[in-house]
Length: 318
Image (cartoon, rainbow, N blue to C red):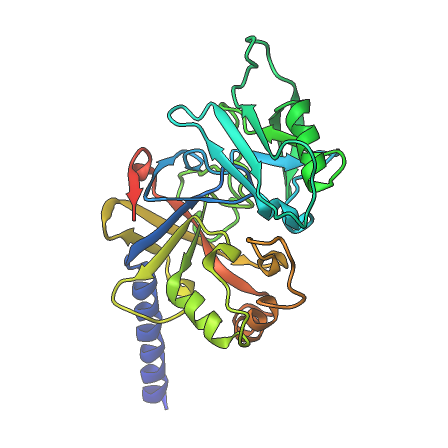
């Protein structure tokens, strides 16, 4: 009897060690798309390379819209935000241009474009007013970018009390230290992102989702608004990213990501980013059907990640 117990215990130890070794390995990924979002929840800008900074990609989600109480506003509440293009004047990124690209069936009146100076001080060298703002459960200070852009946002979005704010150059917003990766001592920060500085998604997982969706409801990756889109190297399995803990970028070996937590999805992927219209159920219903069993009823797509500290200052390329 004791012999069988010993055999069973040995097998259990072998299985546990194997799983630990598998989870400690570095996976290798190929980056196929890079996107940054000058204004949180407005349209993203797809580029060939991005610099990794202290809070994520440089210039990513450093500006956002808030309501009168300082709570962040997104497409969850205002789907028309998907019709605002935002671009930064380079080099320096001192000016932000926002342009409403709704079609003629959505009248807005007045100018369809506004330019905003992004300095911590105004053009006269005077300090700009600070506001206390909230991103989910985090509260931090932000710089109010003025009445002109606030009035423009109210008009094109039909959202009274809108204000545009900027993350201060010296501001700090640590990421949630309770997540699984923070067994290490290094601290990480983000700007106005929901929770972590980067959101990563895989082509294979989107492909499987689209295969499961009803005819005519296939969606693009922009529904999920990742910063980094990857193709796994050596496996074509969908949802393989669920088990990744660390990943090197095959074309930029100085850049690696640590995986923090899966991204829980709300109704926002139902917003068509080209029209601002909201589908009544898809892709949320199908995503829930094929995913919620793995996460106790939660619907996940994509992974929150951080870049290893030595990656700061490096360029990540497609």
